[in-house]
Image (cartoon, rainbow, N blue to C red; front, side, top):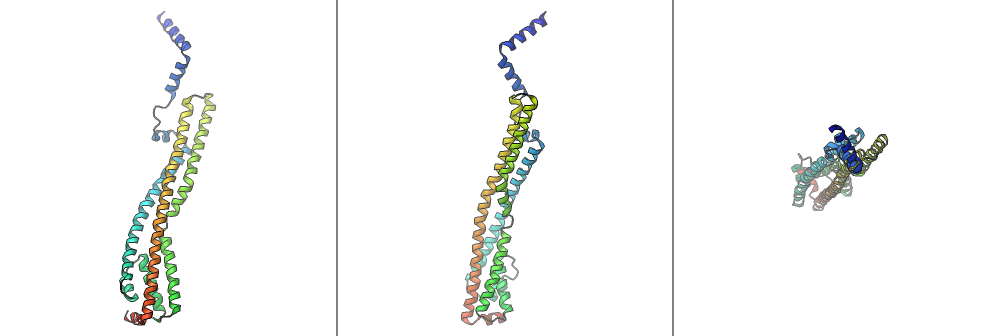
Length: 257
């Protein structure tokens, strides 16, 4: 008799408060933890692949930033030191001797100019200046390509990461609609996880793209400043050669080498 009364009371409570019963069911079916890590673990394999790819792209972005920042600062400091040497009262033979073991850009510029002067037999004329200028342009272009290596990856990440994240979003929402169709219900417990996973993919796309664009622009400015230093170095070498030619000491300087 007691069991019958309990079942009758329960049925009466459900009939009297149907919305409360459905709300309790929704709460019971909702995931207990919608943290980013759990959303990643519970996501579809395609969405997981998108998230993992975006996380890897973000790691690549920060790695390139650290490596290129250290490289540009080191090479810029070396270039400024070489420029100070060229601005002093020196000759091409002495500058070439001091930079003979160097592998930096300005050292390559000085060595290339000295090489052309050596091939020309130490004779100063307008043709020598033109040949030296051509060599310096080639060295500048090669060193500029070398220091800019890797920045194109940042441009690619910044341009494609939002669309990759959008693909993960679309795929997650598609799975949510499929879940609604299969469950034949619009229950929040069916819809919420897929939408949350989709939005997480979008967020990761922005997290990967925004720093990539900012870092790319920053590195572009610093590399442009370094290229300007190389241009100054080439101009200083040409001035040095012209000055020696005007003094009539160019051939003596090459002979003293």
